[in-house]
Image (cartoon, rainbow, N blue to C red; front, top):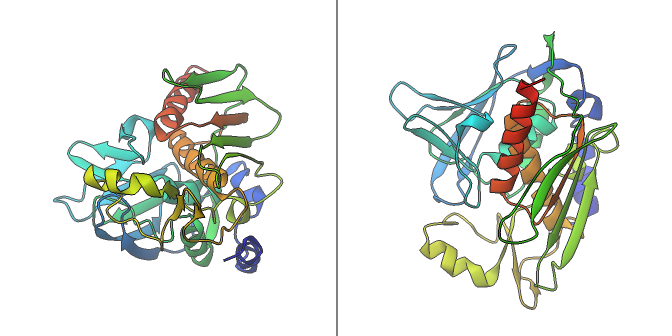
Amino acid sequence: MSGLGVRDQGAAIQTDPSSRLLADGQHTLAAPFERSGIGLHAGVLAQVRVLPAPVGHGRSFVRVDLPESPPIPACIDRVRQTLLSTELAQGEASVRTVEHLLAALSGMGVDNARIEIDGPEVPLLDGSALKWVEAIAQAGIVPQPAPRSSFTLNEPIWVRSAHDDAFVAALPAPELRFTYGIDFEVAAIGNQWHSWSPASEPFSTAIAPARTFGLAHQVEHLQQQGLIKGGSLENALVCGTDGWINPPLRFSNEPARHKLLDLVGDLSLLGLFPLAHIIAYKASHHLHTQLTQLLAQAFMSV
């Protein structure tokens, strides 16, 4: 599918006007929706039902397959591990690979939602957030009679890797912006950057269609570690030494846009987007969530 085709498709379903993500008031879904599919790492089929939630509820997962259906708030203090995806936990209950669905909800401006799931991992669907965005658009989004929390960043906050030059930072800025850079030795990916401002371009067309990606020579090793059991050429881009195994790409810099998608999902665990420019380079879910924790501390101290 070409980049133009995805943009046309996103525009046709009238997804998210920028004003909704940047609005002062809270929003929830107008109606529930359901989707099902295979999880990337566990390879287990799960069904997800996303429902409206009241003011101040936030976004939360509910493991309806477990005794007493334990809830797991989508908050930064519920992060349990970040190996190739973000996992949340509350007591013995957990849910993995939450970042794409959370990015879709937050990118579309949905503050409050109850996410019922009957398995340990959110379905990967096509590897992007587009299917989630389409489902949210079909369900509809309604305003709620309460203000949305806000946070203006006044001082830079950053975290860097102890092993290489990877980092993620939040800088004071006049508007919300995300910028992401990646650098791979594989020529087909190479060095890529993408910068996105919700005020200028909707999440639904700029970021949501970008799919997860991986390197062909790493697939066997990751599967031996019990990871990416549900990965396939249908839900992930795979790059080999001679180029992409399953083209075409939806954007020329689709990998950089997908990493930005992951960043949006991880940062949404803060519960709000700060007025800041978030810049990441060669970062990971671990660095994303570390920055989110620092932002949460800064927000609580205001």
